[in-house]
Length: 380
Image (cartoon, rainbow, N blue to C red; front, side):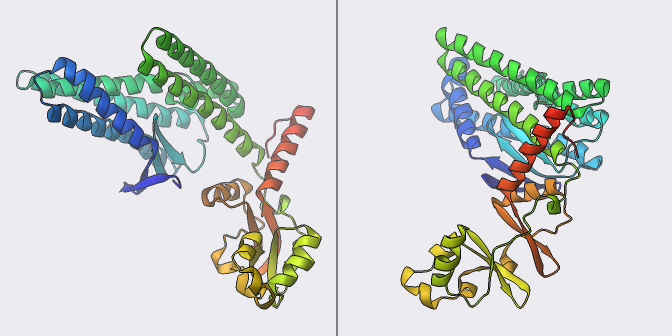
């Protein structure tokens, strides 16, 4: 949610839109106002066409939100809390706290989204039939919304991970081979081939003169290709870190300095000689805070000799800290959410180590290499 615009909460779930939705809103509004409505309703004024296009964009947004909320509601009811939903240019992401534990639960969470889109498509089709004798323009908008929701359902049911259809496909493979990681690899590879197929169609459309449609298909294909790879890699990381604790990866040798050292001495005697970028400040045996190169840069050069490390540091009360027995999967998500590369590991009031993102990545790489060479699955 860090790079999204927060809109509020629905059923206790925080809703946000990625900046790309500004782009999609403008494109959908422009497309309907200047092409579809201009062609089928030439008697409409310019203002009517643009208002109609904006209305379609808003309902499209609400339809995507309903699609994602249906996933979240089923997930919450089955013990997998969803805290946030972020809507992107090609759909949305319900941020599950963890992956489903069974293939059956995966299927139920995945299938409800397309089912919601189909239900909305049927609803707008029914409204089209009711309104058509009264107002052909409003009926036409209902028909467009019916097609949009039906298309959303069909697209999401393509059997490529991480689309809903890919998750349904993964659930099917998972139920057969009882191996979630292998099932994810199969679904992700299928998703990549589907993405290449969509991009290929985009190239064909472009050469045939349908430039806008071709570009859209290329963008959709690239989005799906990247999402397939990223989703599989994320699950590999989670599988690799299953059962691993912070104490298994943290550095126990921590560079520490007393609080009364001035910044000049810190730089000359510690930073340059130890080639380190971060130091723990220990006062009377307690962890007081961290001083980093960023903190040092905030102090004017001429004030280094008179500024203590205690004044320059970031206090422990303002830092995110973790305990040595915490699960490394959760801590890695914490580092990503708050965009931090290192976390102090604290037991009570005592600093017992430092956890660096680079050390975690090297641990994952080493464990995967050992698993690959021994033929073992890299699970905790």
